[in-house]
Figure 1 (cartoon, rainbow, N blue to C red):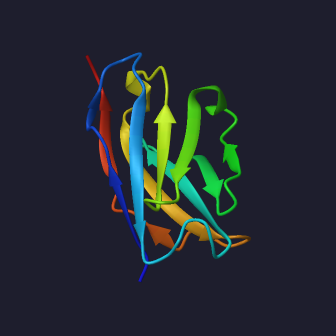
Figure 2: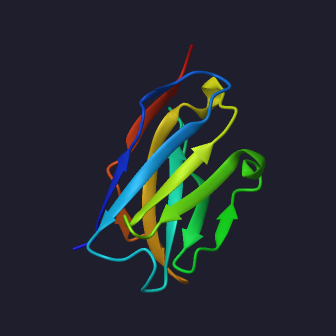
Length: 119
């Protein structure tokens, strides 16, 4: 059974870098043809895809956030990390990590973690 768990600070100050980690258990992030994603949902809005890191270590980002987004991985710890720089209150959201197979939809989700950007 594959499980994902997000971790990181719940409060970030404006202009700082938001950093969240997703720990995956039950499968290796470096195998099985999966993409490992970060997705967020601002209050009162829909889901927004931020980017992914593939089982090969390749990355892709939402063009609207690409200049501020970086996704890294630590295969030894089976974790992948989101870094979002220069945050503003508009980055306040519930952040989810999720996994999807190549050419498939998301079938693994973390429970989500609330991040608030405020001074």
